[in-house]
Image (cartoon, rainbow, N blue to C red):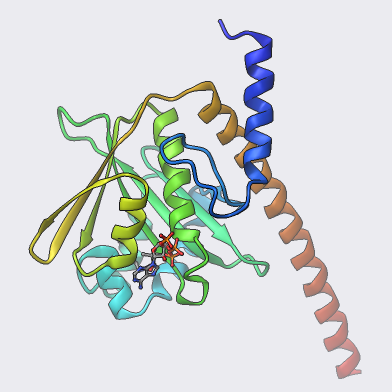
Amino acid sequence: MTETKDWLKASWDAGSSLLRPVGERIAGDGRAPLMVPIRSLGPRYRERIAAHLLALDPADRYLRFGYAASDDQIRRYAEQLNFERDDIFGIYNRRLELIAMAHLAYTTLPGHQNCAEFGVSVLKSARGRGYGARLFERAVMHARNEGVSMVFIHALSENAAMLKIARNAGAVVQRDGTESEAFLQLPPASLDTRMTELVEQQYAEVDYQFKRQAKQFWDFLAGVQRVREGS
Ligand SMILES: CC(C)(COP(=O)(O)OP(=O)(O)OC[C@H]1O[C@@H](n2cnc3c(N)ncnc32)[C@H](O)[C@@H]1OP(=O)(O)O)[C@@H](O)C(=O)NCCC(=O)NCCS
């Protein structure tokens, strides 16, 4: 039974973690240091997910999927995403374009049910702002809350940014020639990780609704402007 004071403390910590500045990362506690609204994406976002991945150039597709994925293969990947089993997280810009997304795929292999694979992509225009690392932290926290005990990443050994994200989080990286595997053992969920996730979800939802309304407003104004120009 959780005591009220523990709930209050966890809620307070979850709220204040959103306001911690970049750079104050606390490894392994699953808390979020960066104020980046990250939303959980459902099947309604399949097209936007496909559009995001199709915007990756051939080199990035190779890094993301481990092969030079064609447009058709990317569309198939998006069509086959299993939102019931897996979790997809996304970051939007003000125009509601999906600029970064992560896929946490839970393994179904016998004996590995408590493992999940992490894959991520950030559009070139949005790189170097910490979004990749932030998506990883978010996915790891969610995985802990889902009872996952190990997250792994399959990356090409040349993928310095991805391996840096993994190492920074404390993952063990095993290199096998041109390919590498990173393994991160996760501690069990805590009241902190659960509260933080709730607060972050709420924050991301509010942010998304603001952006949606602002976009509708600007689209409306642009429409009015077009009518004026046409008259
Ligand atoms: C890998 C990827 C997601 C990183 O996204 P990002 O938002 O630019 O990464 P971040 O800004 O969070 O940076 C993470 C770390 O990598 C470092 N980094 C970023 N780019 C780097 C590069 N080209 N070389 C070396 N390190 C790099 C950053 O300095 C940071 O480390 P720090 O926190 O110690 O300073 C992005 O490059 C990408 O989408 N690549 C193509 C797809 C891919 O490779 N996916 C991963 C395979 S699943």
